[in-house]
Length: 411
Image (cartoon, rainbow, N blue to C red; front, side, top):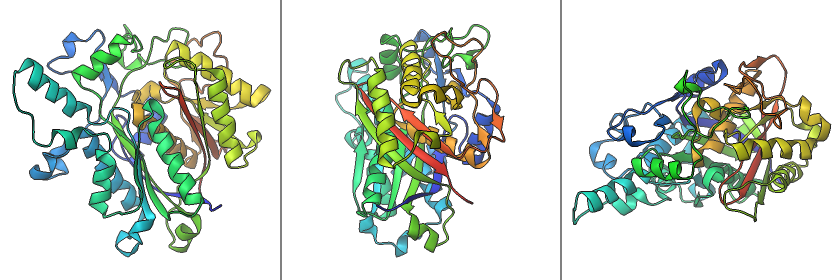
């Protein structure tokens, strides 16, 4: 089995559109959650979201832009960033051995919503010619492959909130086995349409607005947590055969060490301790990683009543008494829940932070819930701990639990 290096990271996130900006805001605990200002936001019960400052017109010519939903625009720009940072010379690569692995939960949600609006409210008999191509779930991965002329495996994973963690893990498996040499892996999500927001509202999982500070409305592991806040964005990692990366003197940002999957086969929305704990153990087992080697945890940490209590119990189940000594970060408190892109963004942030010897804070955690009694790095980043290894968890409606283990690499 080959080692797998992370040689490039590209991201467009509510916290910023570069690694440096996003990390600085996450470490400072600056929340990107805001009240939405749209023509329809006053029709939402709680018009909160975490948006990306991004205009497609700045990155694509008009003919191309007409074929791209926002989810694909974000993915393409993040992939450009990642390949640029990795200093990949794709012109000299065997393009049959370069793969694209992208996760998304809702695909081209804005295009779908616009089409329904035109048909059912506007009474139109026609839709945009490219509606199918813009809305299909595999569009982001397909466009990345086309832009970079990559003819290796091109796969899309849609497992709700664990989609991008699955995409990274599945790419890792193929790299380890020697099936490919390079992968662009991660996720993209642009779900902030009226229809999607109302659908999530109907599930009663969205947070209520904090009366004193809307940006503090997502409160993972808190006694007064009320739910999640939706966000948008993309994060793409370049994964590469370690020996190839070393040979070409690539900037190694980290190493992917393990990946585990397990399914809650009991209820489509209720997480289980057994399912989450099994995924964590599978990730450790896949890389022959001892529990003592895990020095920090990126929690799924949605801020919902069900997840945070179950996740805390699962961590205790896996790590025993040592669970109380492992620092745990839940960054959705500041960037919101990017659904299918969350796992990739959070892994990227965790690795970037470890390279700076920083543990990211879980913000807005003033009074922990009684059954959430671990070390959640509350409200302030922690520096100088020397931690180098992180377990990053992503759990999902539908029950697909995905866990990644990675270490911060040498510069």
